[in-house]
Image (cartoon, rainbow, N blue to C red; front, side, top):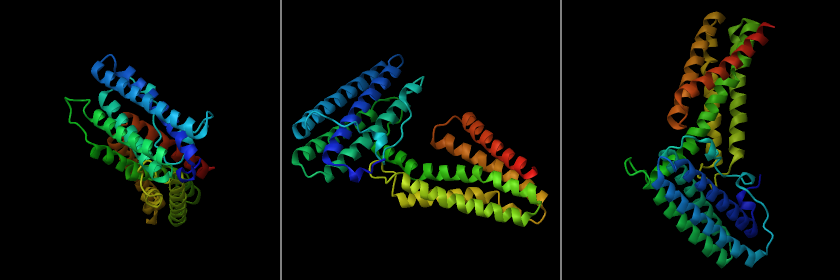
Length: 314
């Protein structure tokens, strides 16, 4: 993946064209998903799709003037810093609240892209167009805010708060899940293999700290936060690393108890509590149905736990 700062003006325009095309198709999918139950809101998304098509044409015209007819295929997934989006066509039935949230996040991210790109370019024509498009994306945010008249309308501040989830909740949750689950196998393998609480504690401590360092670096290097507002990579890395270590230490600390069987029983209880906390966070902040969240984390935890038991008894 390329970093955003490494892109030339030609590549920035090519990426902008690709983004507008993708956003237009997403709005078309949103309109199709809402057509039956929310025809008025579907029409609004059709208009937004037409606006995105107009943006694309203006970008194409400027690109041809500056760089010719060949446009390199540069997509969002090729550049660090973009939020990964769930395919809209998978979301059925479509809820207006989900569509509105998707539209606000899309427009906020695209606006950030144009503002950041405009500051980097030295060409007056390119800068002017990018600035104009940033203002028009801001209008789309307002349109998305007014789509659900019967509900409490979210403002752009609410969209900013959802990005707070990207900056803190998501990296913290990723760390907690990894620390709580991935350390189960070495911890319980050590417990059943050695029948010694102290040695098991050392293994768990090493696994938790090692996983924390690894996850922290992985998160910090995954995205520089330039476009998405996901925050400084150092802070995300620290959050992920600390939560990974916390997740691993939670069921490691009981092995400070000298009786390994008592320690194991307490550790199992703590593991169950950790998994329930993870499921609750996913339900509250990630809109994951509680049943699905519980099933996913419990099944994963049980499989890793069984792997540790089998290895420890082999």
